[in-house]
Image (cartoon, rainbow, N blue to C red; front, top):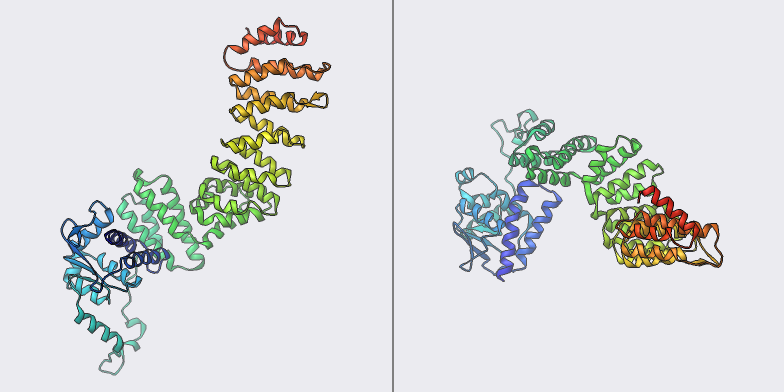
Amino acid sequence: MREKVVLAMIELGKGIKNVNFYPPGHPALIQAMEKIVAAIETVPPPEAGIEIDVTKNALLYREEPLPPGNKAIADLNRELYHRRASRLILLNGQKPEEIIAFLGVMNRDIQDLHEQGGLEKALLREKVSRIWVNRVDYEGLTEMLKKEEEGPAPPEEDEAGVSADDQPPDLEERPPQGPEIGELLRRLEKETEAAAYRDLVVSLTGALLREHGDRRIEYSGQALSIYVVHAERPPAGDPEIADIARTGIRELVSDDLVAHYIRRLKERGGRNRAETEALLTAFGERAVKSLLFALAEEGDFLIRKSVVDILLRIGPPVVPAILDNLNDARWYFVRNMVTVLGNLGEPDLAPHIVTSLSHPDLRVKKEAIKGLSRLSHPSAVNALSELCFFPEESIALQATAALSQKKEEQAVQILARRAVQKRILYPNYRLAHEAIESLRIIDTDAALSALEEILRTRVICETPNSREMKQHALRCISRMSGDRPKEIVLREKSGHAAHLRAEAERILKRRGW
């Protein structure tokens, strides 16, 4: 029970800042309030309600202090104590709108609240019937409910018999207008103090959400441009401002804005696109599905490349949507999905890329090989090892070259076998040449030993191709690190094979050994 009370108080404490940050009706605010209600309902409150005593330094539940080290509980304790609350009572049947009203009252200026009769009176005026401070005012509650049942009083008439509602518009009391959006944007761009920056973000978010159509998109674009710059390079180097700017981006992003900037990206043909790419990247996961749709439908190579770049900059949040599209019927779309997975550089994605190797289109296989070459994972080595012997030579060549990025013993063994494996009587010399080059790039003792074995390979009858294969192996040995390569070249200089002696002399002369 106590743990549930602690959780409920933590959520209620967090709600103070949420109500101060989000404009009324915002989905994130509603979600936060529902979370508070759910946390309170898990207790559940007894008939008399959950009673939390308020002291200067702690909130008490059944005379035991709640964890004072928790920031949300400490904030709630401070705000209640400064507003002269000695007890907080939560009754059954909490409603999100009453939670919002309660937290809104908690955010009011303390002096103004005291002048208006204190926290108790303010909650009654806001018709909060399920959250009380100090005591449950049943008389005040009954009076409030009776007024609700009676409905609003009829409009008062002046001496001439005209009701207040019939007054002409110019005589009505107009609500005070906040700063213009343009002014908020100018102040936001120059602000260097985190608290003031947060206030500007809150005001600007509310003002933009009240705008409609093209005006909202235009102003949102200006705000987002500022946020992106401040998230990357915060004023005065303040990391808190960078966090607030990123929050501002998340609050403004919408499907309409994503679609607008994707259209802008297409209209510019992928050129002069830095700002648009930065904004779409900042939208993060919210933009992924729209970007994938654009990638699937777009015919312009530059735009497709730009979309892939954006997805890579968004990073891991794109993975779930990409995995959902790996079985798409369009080969070019699957290839782009594999491109993104391979370039993300996450080893755990290798098994997903391996599954795409079953795609019938060779272009998808080739892209998968590129991706696997970048990822350090056992499944990548296994898949590339098998593809080294794929019937289609272009696939086998690419897989053999990709194994050069692997240092595992298995990769060395496969490349050595690939180099000397005979096709009827002789090896496939194109694949042998690629395997020897990959062994040179691996440049380990095991790879050097494998190249030595290739020098000793025998064939039924020496041919120009077989001699060239061994000469190439000797050249690759000479370019590897350590002392052993020089020893091997010197040994071959005095060996029995004339073509290797000649090659060794050329190497020694060229290297100055």
